[in-house]
Image 1 (spheres, rainbow, N blue to C red):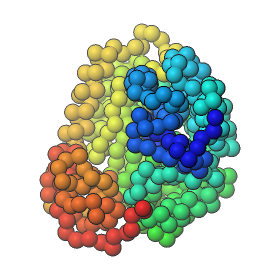
Image 2: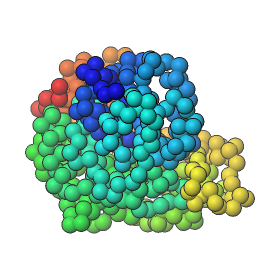
Image 3: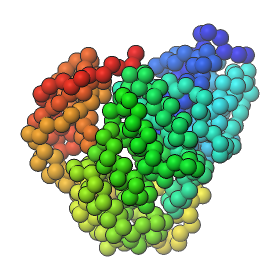
Length: 446
């Protein structure tokens, strides 16, 4: 069986923004093959779950969702699992969920229409080979967001932190050619989008063989119509002087960095194989703040990693206080099969009760610090980009250059516009604001 004009596809995405970008690539590839996107799985001929493997909880959510889909899917639908969980488990997924007929890893999307067609004819397939040359340059992504765009510039990772599954699910690091990234940035602007986020597992280690990340920032930032330029997620070790200088000099580069710390203890960081010390991380923060005044900093932190002592955890709390993060994504350690952390001595295991108590304390410290900073900002003015309707009432969600979320009154005609707002209130994490004036709104892609 091959698809016909009525063939439909539904894609559900889990995990990081790289997965969101990959879902856009998959949807674009299937659209080119004649599939139309639909909003719910019960409408779809083809259902794809694009998955995350970073923590066990993420995988269990997908297993549960597959069970739900089995009961809800219409007769004859094809169900596929894509992404990092697909790469990690491979054929095992076909055994775990008998109604799954397609398993495809992050480097296999080029074959997606062919594999889906085979699945519709009853053939179950697994495509989990790595391709060190694949960047999907000829794909036309179908973007979910009409206000901002995600552009992958690098795939894979060479750092191999002891807790991390990513090198095993996305392979070795490789970077796109600078000219290809600039070409996509120009296309994004033609679609009416003015904010771009460059994506990579350790994005600031980007190097295409001739150009480094500093040169990439300057090249994309120079594309006419690119008004805001962000990147995620960088590694603290790869903020060279050239990169920091580019951040300070390129007008489009926003005053925000998501800077994963993971732990504030040098001994813990060594066990994690993060390749920097507490002091080196704090020095990186100081360099960024010196070159980019007012920069907002967010981070990732793990508690309960094997061997974490009370003293080491206290070092993490003190580092959080010293930096004064604007926000943090905090996690209990989740062992991932095949990573070095799972081979550490059993006596190093931190109990779930202890890890949960540490996580609660960490969240309290992060929130208290963020609340204190945000209260000091009340009355200030910020340029914001209106992103989407908020979940609260008749409000819109907007974002400042330093990554503050601001809820403002207004209707959907303001989506994609730049406004100046005054910060009038805060919950401790998000702000409310009043519009002071509009500033040369840009068209939203249709």
